Amino acid sequence: MPLTNISIKHLRCFNDIEISLSPGINFFYGANGSGKTSMLEAVFIFSSGKSFKSSNLQSLIQYEKEGFYLKGFDKNSGHIVEVEKRKNKSVSIKLNNTKIVTSKLIKKFPCTPIHNNTFSFASASPDFRRKLLDRSIFIAEDKFSSTWFSYYRTLKHRNALLKDNRISDIYAWNQKLALEGELLTKYRKNFFDKTLVEFKNLLNILEPKNVFDFLNLISINFSFGWKSENKLLDSLEENLNKDLNRKTTTHGPHKSDITFLIKDIDARQTLSRGEQKFFSIIWSYAQHEVLKKQYQIEATLIIDDIKSELDERVFDLFVELLKHNKNQVIFSCIEDCFSSKITSEFNEFKKFHVEQLG
Image 1 (cartoon, rainbow, N blue to C red):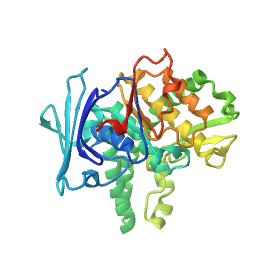
Image 2: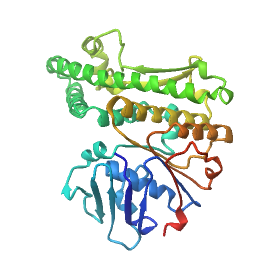
Image 3: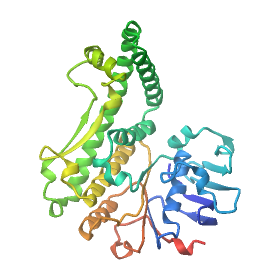
């Protein structure tokens, strides 16, 4: 559920602030270094216990302070979440005054960030695209987590056997890996198919043909990580010699991918960064539509520096997307690029000048 109130103490440039968020659109603007990204980081920490910008939470602690403290409130559920990080100590997370593990946050306050790394979704690594897909499935499917961890534990064990050349043991582990891998792929393919439907629906609503002349040529496909017409077990056994030579498992869902093609050409060779950014936003938004329609889960979409690399025509498409928005969206920009776009079609909207927050 989306947070409606957050307080931030001693995180980056914020000493002690409290703000009330809209359940719909929230827009933060201000000069570079004013705290726009830090505000979005704080919201994401409530969902993951991590920053999307830094792998080290201690680096977020304000200079000469001993730690930072975040508190969030969701008035619809009544949930209160607290996150505290002190120097040289593990992060502490409480839900309604009870300590919880980080993995529980994503279910309570689901959130997807779009930032400099995700802007290039089409040109990112397959592993990156898998993680973005898996994040939504972790939120949607209760049993996906155990399936995911079980598969990757078994994969690690099989790879160890390959390195030791223990062929007789490998055959026994092939069965387990294949069973878990088929189930993992079923989850991924199911969510991908639903997302693709919503993606196409959004394009039909936005009708961006006047901006992009290649829409009818786009092909988005899900690759299993092995030949989809074969069983995974057959593929593992057929490629055993290759795996032994390379000392690693070369086929399976750990090699799955989402491919973006335009006229059968890799989108990385065709799309500009601004175009990639736009389609990354639409794809992430489509995943949120699936969560809302298929699973009755409201997730927050965070977009850092929205105007970067988007020309006015493409930005207007983003504004059009927000007119159809039914989820919480939090985005930032250096300048107030949004107020002039506001019409009566925006029911839930809040604007924040970061430099005036204190």
